[in-house]
Length: 342
Image (cartoon, rainbow, N blue to C red; front, side, top):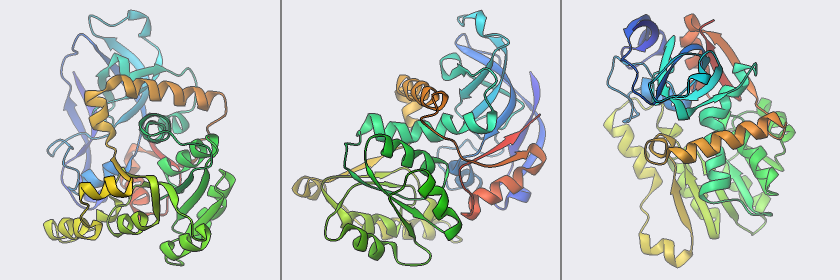
């Protein structure tokens, strides 16, 4: 079928990178559904894709995006027909920036009249957070946890999930306006890394002790700093490379990003009893889809029971896609940013 989509046509500035145009969708496979899209969410991976820094993104021109809210208009031959006409939240392997979205039926959940600007945060960002805090390496009561980009989409959810497990949360933010937000969500300590060196501030908070977990979506030089503060049994999660965004020198910027992270010798992990855990939810969706299904189901229930709060950072129309991307890339955004077709 022919539909419209926000197409990523070239890398670079958001004002020039996107175009709303007609695209052709493939016929449904037997296990797929077609969603008439109401709204889609933004993730930092979208910014990386626009800057040509996300190797898993489709070749340009392409339609990116992981999450959609809309009405099911058609189903494959093996899909239960009862989902037709239902409003769903769905995870997709790219394509969410389209006015219509094709995805697998088992990646969609009925949501009734829940607000799109909130539930979109549950799809990729809450699933990422829940996978780290509750599935891959569960938090234990009393763990000292450092959350980078704590006022962002994943960060605001990580704070709440960590506090739910009884952790002591140290939130790292980039300006004073974000301090109150992360405190309201339960952060025990807050560090403004633009005002002071966060490693020094972290030492002052820890008073000679160490952290048990770092949730690091930044990479680069922050990796070495976190590693210094990580104690035996500690886990350092790497689930993003925000420090790479904005690099102006292509390959050289990428190599410098890796240089700043340093070299880890596997035997050293064993001797210090510390772990590095890489998280890419696209790979989990490809190879362990039922984990995605479990995590999304659980986070929806936590949200419905008001045990998980979504912070809305901005709602834009498709004609404002450049403004939405610019806000997310600026580092000044908080919570979830979404874009509406209708």
